[in-house]
Amino acid sequence: MYKDEHGLRDHIRLLMPLFGFITAVWLLRFVLGAVGVSHWLLKAASVTVAASLAVLLSVLFIHVRRFGGYASVVMSSLLLVAWGQLLIVAAILFSVVTGLDNIYVAPEFSVPRDDNLHLRHILGHLTLGIGAGTLFGAGTGCLLLWLLRWLVPMEARE
Image (cartoon, rainbow, N blue to C red; front, top):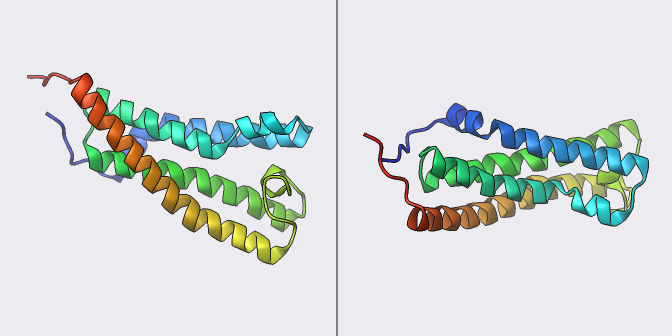
């Protein structure tokens, strides 16, 4: 019925369009910040929100393609959230290394310009961002998968 024996490569292959979606939102936010659009529009182009939507879409992929079970949802959540957080960390590091400010280090969306605070900001994304995001995404995703399997069961193929 449902195959749970998928490796990391299989998950990455399944999630490639979603990695692309998160990356596109990251780049969009970068560009919108550079041209100076209003704050409400910048908040709408959120990598964290994009990663959350990507986790929910991954659950649909898992269900429709009979890709796996709850373990696949957790793995997808970890991979997608980690990707989003790593993109944010890359933007912060770019700003620190080059000295050029970008939206990811702007005081309205980040901590004040101080190298120690940037290190804390980066560590926050790599720990709390990935950890809490993965747990929240996995919990929400598993609930959605359970609801999908209950409300829209996929009949077993012969």
